[in-house]
Image 1 (cartoon, rainbow, N blue to C red):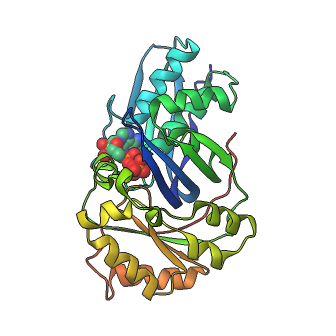
Image 2 (cartoon, helix red, strand yellow; image 1 turned 180 degrees about the vertical axis):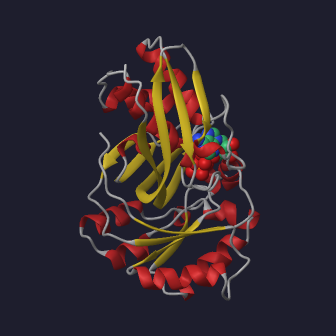
Length: 302
Ligand code: ATP
């Protein structure tokens, strides 16, 4: 047992494309999504303690509004499941420095949970590989297995069936999140996917072949997120932000996950920064609650 503090990065993700294939009889939605890690990350600090308990507090003492610091936090659930699965008798102290906007479609909570799983694997010398850890991750949430893997990947099933893809061409990213919150469950339900025509579905295979060929233009042309159909009527700012990003030189702009964050892809950091300034204090001021400049992130956690 290692009682020193360790620090892990929990990276946000965007969906370069997202398709919902159908709603299954058991109520789950079957998806096909292209996932991409971002440089933007939370910091998870953790250390083992001899007592059998899990504690979670904000790093530096300042709580982040909207983030629960009790059993509702996915980090807490991940720690409890790791203890149970691997028979860990000792406890763990967790601290979270939050940078990823929450309930934003950026998988912040899932990334934090994945970091806890990897951290406990290390702190308690478990040496479990990806298949076992991803099983624990899936019991926390459908996006957690991907967060354990990171990089560019195709996620199928309910998000847990993963295939690594060639790394996407390096890209500058601007994240713009409107003030309004959005419920993932509501977006999926109001999509009524089983009634949508074939044309509503984005070309996921086209995006994969663009990635394979490192063809950025083709990638930008094929990207799509079927959940925009359901989210736009709930938060009209999504479309305004998307158009604003495109008018300011973004190669592509799309809602991430179930929203409401919209991302713009830029080839250079200067044009991305100019667009960011327009949302912060220029012509598009007031549209966004969070404006974050970041980039694609390549890593292999496992
Ligand atoms: P999506 O899965 O659509 O990408 P999201 O990942 O952006 O959604 P989260 O940041 O995970 O959404 O937060 C969703 C909700 O989960 C929050 O409103 C919060 O109440 C709760 N939550 C649980 N654990 C965490 C965490 N570690 N960080 C932030 N929110 C958390």
